[in-house]
Image (tube, rainbow, N blue to C red; front, side, top):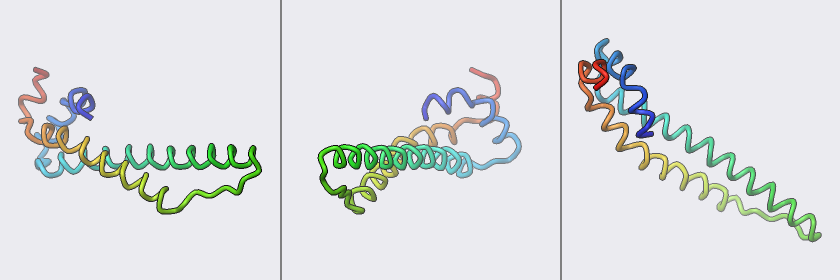
Length: 104
């Protein structure tokens, strides 16, 4: 997310120059971080469940994946995504339009 903020400075500057508030910029980057972490968490949960099912089937075991474990995995990715996205979001919101558009 830090790299995303650095690469998108002109976009942030333009949005700020057009009237976007700091809160809107923060919300944008935190939302992006949460969506990316949700997609990763869902993908990891599906992949982990599939691998567990394949291994259980190869051993003739019943496939058991507790719902709470899947929910906890997705919940943890969302918390980590929020924490990882918060600093870059605050950093992006603090950029002044002129600083962001100048490219320095």
